[in-house]
Length: 99
Image (cartoon, one colour):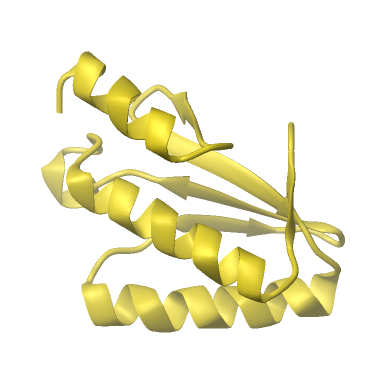
């Protein structure tokens, strides 16, 4: 994807930011709720064949997404997964946090 295409897609995903060739977002949620949310995300990832890097902390979950098969570059699949993660986070009562 071109830089301008990436910026356009980011405008559709409030709260996600670009860090190099990865998009990232964090959600505030207590530890056990975060575990449940991660399992839900993992189920969806398995179905679509694309996954995020996930960092679980006591009160926060951070997702980083890039397409490993494309040489760690951003693709449409990354933005699709980000939108799905947003829906799952909302369903689990997670709240967006800034880093």
